[in-house]
Image (cartoon, rainbow, N blue to C red):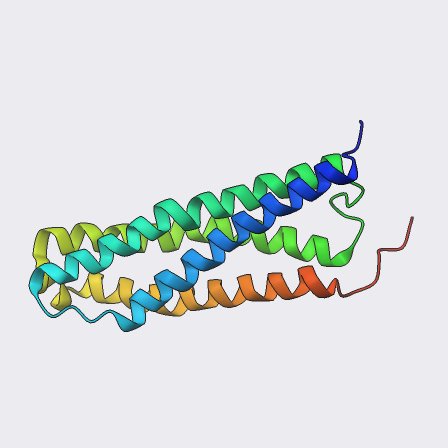
Length: 166
């Protein structure tokens, strides 16, 4: 299969960085809203979680999927491959696990809180499921953002030696 030339690789790198900025920027925004936004009125409870849902739907999800697709294109159309370097393998594992965890845990907790807050408004703050979701989003959302930062670091430093040829 024909590999990208240097200009095509640069364009791919720009796209990959753009999608990563969407993903990590959305994660930081969502985490900041989770910890800092303090609803004063009953309707504000719904708006806090609806705002977080918008960040998730329009920044985090497209950013994560864009990174994933860009990674596949990198693996197929450049000399980076998928498994030539240990740091790339780590990034692939982390990317897939974070997307899966976001899809099947963080997303449902957040969307569940939007539904609860829409129905209960201020009374949501005494709902056990709502409060449990908040705790999970705070803990696991912060971990997700930390892991994304770690991925940025290993992308720049490219640690661990190249895998030995068989």
